Image 1 (cartoon, helix red, strand yellow):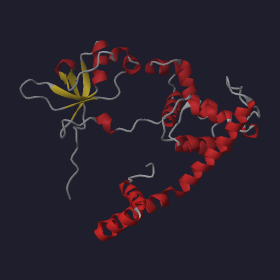
Image 2 (cartoon, rainbow, N blue to C red):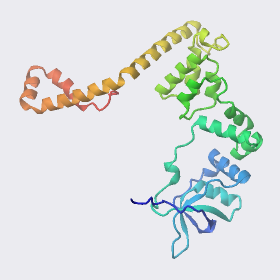
Image 3 (tube, rainbow, N blue to C red):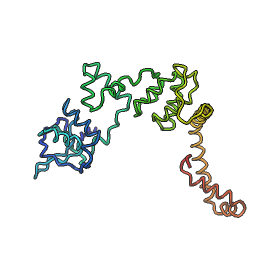
Image 4 (cartoon, rainbow, N blue to C red):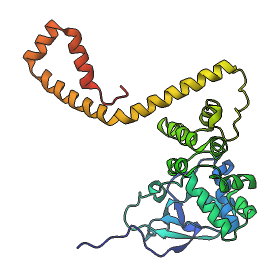
Length: 293
C-alpha cells in the first residue's frame, strides 16, 4: 500500500524576512485596503496565527519563494518583524494553500466569535484584532438571536451581511424559512432583497404584527400588489424546484433522440422539405445545453 506523501514539511521553519522572495507583486493600493488593515491589526494584537507558505531554499541564494502570505509579509515588515514561521512545501511550487480553502461562512464566524468571547477574550480586544468597530462584533455575536433553526440551517454555508438577521428576525419562523428559501433559490442573499421580502410579508406573519414603515414613493396599493406578486413568485420557485430534475432528464433524452433522428439524411431531408419550421425547432433543442436557454 502506497504511503501518503505530504505536500509540506509538518514542522514550521523560522525564516528571515530578507530571505523571502515574493512570487507576485502586491498592488500599490494594498496598504489602504480594509483587508490589509485587519490583518495588520490582528498580527499586532495577537501575533501571526497562520504561517507563511514557501518553497525549499534555493541552494545558491538561500532564498525561499513565497507561495502564500504576501499580505501577511507586507504587514510583518511594516510592524518591524525580522523573521516569520513558514511551512515549507515539498511538491508543487505553484501550490497556493489559500486557494484550496473554503472561506468561513457567516454563521461559522458567528460561532467562532461566540466561542472566543466565552473563553475570556474581550469584545474590545477582538474588535481591535479584527480592526472593526465593537458594534460589528456585537452584531456578529447576536447574529442568530430570533432566527429559527430551520432558517439558520439554510444559511449555514453562506456568506451574508449581518444586517440580514436584523430584517429576518422581524418575521415569524414560518415566514423566515419561506424568505430564506426564496433568497437562496434566487442566489440573492442581500439586505435589499430581504427588506423587499419584509415589506411584502403579510401583517399576521410579522413578530410585532405591524407592517414596516412605508417605503418612499410606494403607495399602499403598490405594497399590496407586491405582496401578491411575491407570494406568486414563491409558488413558481417551489414548482420549478420540484420539476427541475425531471425537466433536465427530459431535455437530455429529447436532445439525444432528435440528434440521432437527424443523423438520418433521408429523415432530415423529408422534414426540411415538408415542415422546415419543425426542423428549425429540432435544431434549437439539439443545440440547447441547459434549461436557461
